[in-house]
Length: 352
Image (cartoon, rainbow, N blue to C red):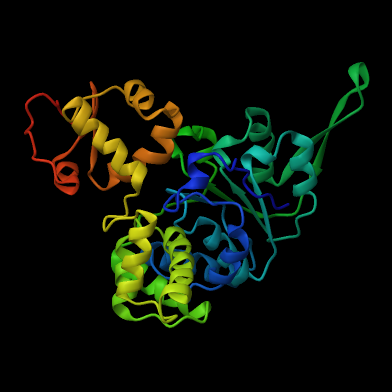
């Protein structure tokens, strides 16, 4: 069962070029760029090598793969890895997401369709309801589900065997997963942001798949602005293609990437207008902080959840923003990036 994530056109994620979250028409482009083998998958070398071992061992034993949990920020390749695992094992992949599985009946329908060794990929698995999550436990442990029949005094539970399968769960919020669910995965993989060199290789590959000429300098410039995220790089390369065809020679080079990003407001660090606005308010209105997240949300006219889930993660990861017990602060790196003189660490407190 496949289900696309629904995002309102007015949401901050949908309107940002640099958001790593999947957007409306992204699925068809994902199919173009998505590799189907470990050999074609660029980056995450340690995890890729381990997964290759697990798949080869499972094939030799003619057993399903152990259950796998993929953790990390959006856009780093969790869905792609699930597709590769299914391709390498020669089985079908069934894709769904936590919010889509609204009740146990929906999960029952999916589980009873699986053949031996098939892979069930549940994106945003941390958003499963407690009832559905508990129903899933015997399915992944004993390959058995309890189906309720009848009503009232005539209700009874029937144990139904299902074919052995592999659950691949994906989450961007590991801390929201319950401990019992985490412990039922045999393999846990935490994906990291990609270095510029690997994003550069991904950009060259994506350009080739789109039939575009792209030189090394253009790929490097694009990689530096892609926030260490393949999905952002692939989204950006489509916009660069537009500018190259209309205002350039059709080739992706340093100049056209620079022009595109300047027009789109994406700077050399991958920050967009909203990122710079958040840091600017911290520095210019509140002397660099500390500022409570509610105050910051009010100043930006955004919801607190949007600040924490959409804007902060990359700024924190790149060291532009800090968290202290008293609130958010702008770091020296943020001052320097925006061209403001750094005011020292007089009142900002200790980072945690």
